[in-house]
Length: 136
Image (cartoon, rainbow, N blue to C red; front, side):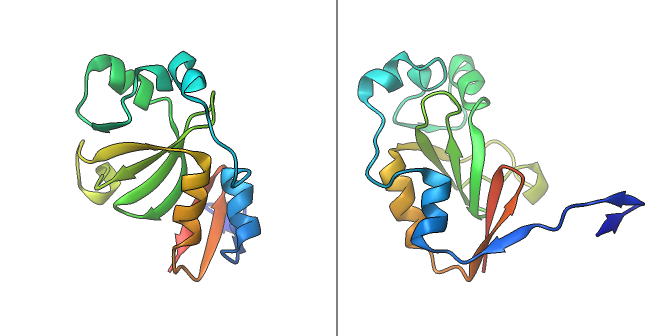
């Protein structure tokens, strides 16, 4: 596929199965210890649940979380690149959706992220680089 003469890779589409979800979240039985979270340079300063407004220290740490899955416009899964902890970002509408800095960030274990994704009734999931998007 081309876009203005540049080759654009076609996103790969997968069924939303246990195997696909496990590829995204890792082992469904895994967890990140409280000590690992406390000692993490990113997660150590982020509370278990917080509004996106937070302090400057929280905002800096939150900006380092990588978006992993867009479940829908108001629910995304983010992942810490250092300790592997997941966060659900609920109610956030970014600039592309015409929103601002809203929403709540809730820490989740990889096993909880696995279960959350597995419960979705999406037709499929597609991969775009390191990011996944549910196809309804």
